[in-house]
Image 1 (cartoon, one colour):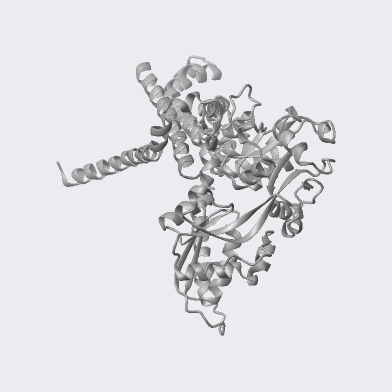
Image 2 (cartoon, each protein chain N blue to C red):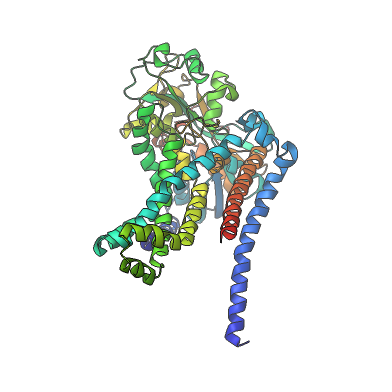
Length: 289
Length: 280
């Protein structure tokens, strides 16, 4: 196995190289305004990165001389990199905090955070009070919230995660009082944990959950206070638990960066936002002037 | 001194200096990034605070130190005997064809990436261990998978150490009518001891440093573990879990957990090498 590793690595490298040289060549002629050139670097949230990568590919087709480099590393890295100028644009899957007000946000989409249980769990929905009592360990058994007699396995997120912050804010919970049975990092980790544990409850990005349910993962999104958790209800504003997906820039971003942000906020990329299971913002985008 | 000797001297000295510098540079970097937190919070609070909630000003790392040591020690306790047995097996019990295949499979085990171990543990092992309650993500699951990951290290070192035992001693013992097990227990293992211990130490440090699989399997709740079935978070899992989303001051606190991990590892390595020297 080890002997083949270099070979595999080299072929990956080659594949990436081919990918790089492809993009600028496939020029879509006649689109005009292809005066943008140079290189644009984006770093940050791994939630947003796949979407931005697709948008960037489309943008590169319009501007063949431009190279857009998308790297992940979490919202924290995106913010730090934008601050010190390593990245032109940062990706943040949460609103900025007061001590980050030196940066400017440009929202491009929204993402809901929904509660998930195992597919076989008969519970029909939870109220906000029930969720709070489960996470504060006041309710320990599913029969206390109207389910079967099974002990609840509480799946929680690690401190600093964007979904955690949305969750805590929604239910006004103090994180020091939460009693969890498992703490996970990424959405996929939470989903795999719940899918493998019949009596677990967790909360994840609704977009990711919907994609996984479509792929046959045995989980179910729970309605909250009677409101169904889906990208549709997040989009209509009915579902309360959601977070913005933001691009962030320093005070004076280069013109290329502004053009790209405008493109991300335009209706022309709504199909990509939807296919990534996020919600396009229906209101007028806060296009920076 | 001849020319080639001089060249060799320069080359070995440079590479030795380089590898030592890398460690020192990493240590220096850890200190630099941990310094703001150490200055503001002080080292003692990392051991005495009520809990680990860095965003709320609680910074207790003790449960993580315990979890890190418990999983790594457990892994070595499980993998040690298995690895040594594997080394003895290929030399004294296995027919040569089987021995070759066995070696190849052990090497393959070493080549499996840690995420794959983690994924397997998460989707196969954890649901099995969940029979005893909870999600099955706990110290026991993490320890078992860690043991599988470090097993090849012990096995390969034991294999080589056993191979290095002079065949005269083995044949001599056999000529005196000592049984196979007697030869292994009284002649081979004592002579192979140094090599085997080196393998165990390397396995231990690898277990201490493993992040991904443990992160996926240990449950990551920061509480003093009460049994093998309690969830726990190791120091490295802590960094991997929180670093991506940490803002400035939180980041610095995470580097303290990296620093403490380095401290734990160097203490263990020093203790073992000191013991080995005093034992000889």
